[in-house]
Image (cartoon, rainbow, N blue to C red; front, side, top):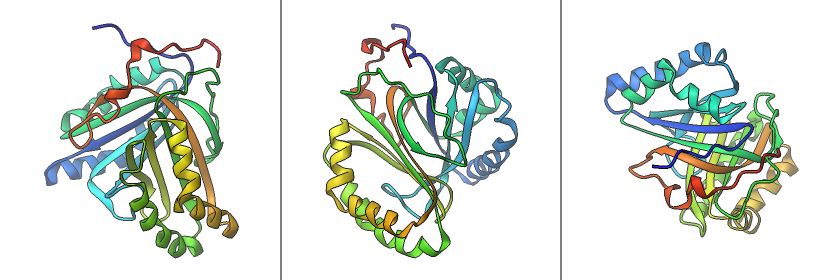
Length: 250
């Protein structure tokens, strides 16, 4: 087995966990809350959000109580790998029934998440393959009803859409703090969905009504995965780490 080729610079990680049984689910929820205390001090960790997981495709108000996760940003892939060796993290892996991790390099971003916008963007990476998209927002209370009324058509339209590899709703608080993480076969597929479907109309409506307190839209190039989600590694057919050529320029 060839060694994993690590890109230079900043590394983003989406980590998902699923737990079975009342004891494991309770442990997972409890430790996810406590994670806010022990994770910020880890060397090289620049940003972290403990997450709830949506029950359906894309945005969904109702969470999966048996699932949770983290979105993290590290100063380097080496720091990300070191974090995964930490005892507190290994406990999550050992007690979970299933876990899935996607390693990524940020390529573009606008907006912020809880004030974080410190992206070190990779400008010279090959973007001809799969692309990840993280869209997150903090909703204004007066906009909640209108937003969730638009969600169902978007989720149905996204399901089985051409070029969609993976989709998972994530968030900090049900209803108010929401995000969708998707992976597409190409930038073209992602932009076609964003602009030529009801999703595009909904985004224009949100901007017209100024319905978000805060929002962030970030793209990433995925370069490695570990584990499975719902029984499979959806990105595996698209990733060949040793064939990637990473630029030393960021």
